[in-house]
Structures are given as structure tokens and as C-alpha cells.
Length: 132
Image (tube, rainbow, N blue to C red; front, side, top):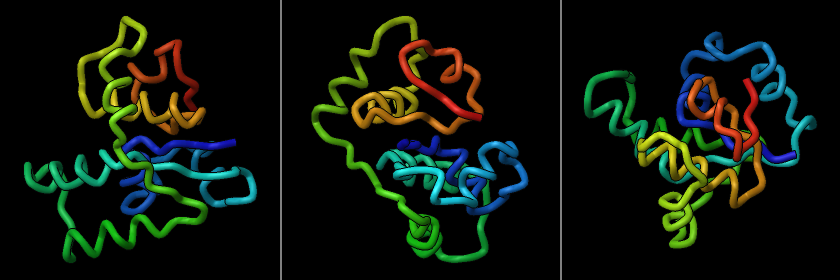
């Protein structure tokens, strides 16, 4: 099975794994339990925006942090393709208007992946699978 990490799950795995659910922690600690981990290209941007807004802090170079955080077993960074960009604007309704969430949802749908997320809105969305 493929799993797409929501931005907060990716950040928490690399900064505060104790914030992850036991189910997610178990999954990420055992790469043989999944075929592939995915991360939307929007997630490093969201991380960078959190730094810019001083909502999170790190004690190293942000680009080095991102590079290290992308070095997870079986992780593939999924580019923001024109198709995903379009499909993020035409998701089955109702869905929230957060553009990054729309891109993450469209990416998961495009890749037939389950989203690893604590986000209540995404978890309630009937047109995508989620895990927490």
C-alpha cells in the first residue's frame, strides 16, 4: 500500500515523533509494512512557510533540514504536475478551501494513496482514504 504523508506528519516524524499516533509510528518504523511513502511537493513549501511565520523553529540550515527529512525509507517526493494542479481545483465537494490541502488530496487521489493525517477535515472527506 502507498501512504502519502500530510505535511504535519512528515514534520513530526522528523522533529517530534512522539506527536504521531501509535498506529502511524508503528507504520513508519517498519518500512516492510508499506510499498511506498509519498510526500507532495507542496509539503516542503508548507514547512518553509511555517519557518517564515515563526510557527516552528529549527537550529540548522532549513535547506539541509529539508534534504535530511526527505531521506526516509521508500519516500518519493511527488511533483506538482499540471494534472494535479487542475484536479486540486475540481475535487468532489464539499471540501475545504485550503490550497495546500487540496493539492495533498489531489496527489493522494492521483497516486491511489492513503493520507497519513491528523487533520479532521481530511479524515472526514469521503473521497480519499486516511490513516491516523
